[in-house]
Length: 360
Image 1 (tube, rainbow, N blue to C red):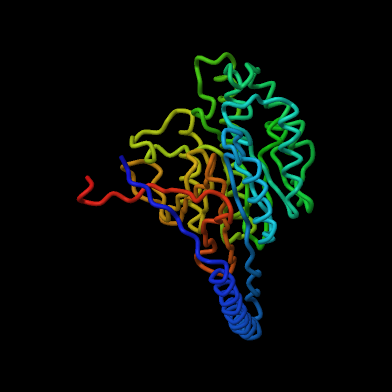
Image 2: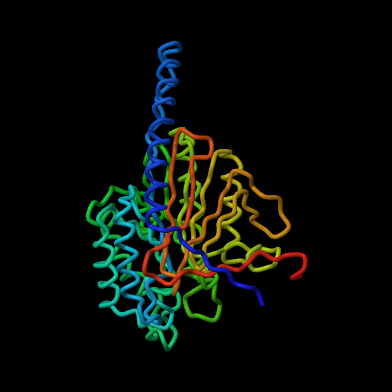
């Protein structure tokens, strides 16, 4: 059994002091950077000034009603994200627990929740709200019917949710994949961001569920095309980085085996190929396992070499109602700096303690 350790947040005073110091140092650094770039531009006449740093938030696999304080904890998380005023927030799917009935009323309630974000809220679906709804505890729905309802309720327009929505480019513009309105892309500071509809439960690669394999096969091809189009856009615009958001944890290394699961193989091989060719920072952000995890130099397979320009960030979830906050500096070589966003008043998360030689 793995020992657990708690993440103990610093005091409010310490956080405030640290944030003030960080902002002061950032202003100084930016001023020096702009001075240097301006001088270089004056000399060469070509060097552009770097885009301003900004931040975005992400969360996933919440709220789940199985927690007695779930609704209140989710409200506190939204308030904490709003307090930070990020450029945008992304919800990575699973907007209800697997033991909740995926009713139209609950889907509308979650959409209303998303519109309490004071900024922009971008959403990509998870398995709990459609893939797994054929189960008795989820209401014995037809999964593709629930997916059609989600597309109608959440993706009728090419813009985000939230009180300050941002415009999105979606896959509906490609006549071959017009039904995949949930796959979206946007740009901030030159960085290209995209949601990709890849979900848990083996990405709906479920031969025993009627209609699942046909749905998976069609969406799997669309996802590959969307990933390639996203990187093509990044190359065309000379983007400093790319970030992809999806619900599932598709990495076989996390599950202790070397080979790809068939439901995720096309997606992962496409992302790895495109990321290696891009050769600039790529951030992959997902949910699914309900724990915070950050891997810089991601291994796509258990025994494969790491891809040095790819970072994987996994969010909290379920009863660990917290988020992540990512600072984006388009002018830096790293571009992304990620950290947990721990919500005061919510139960502190517990993470697996790294194995030691003595514990093996």
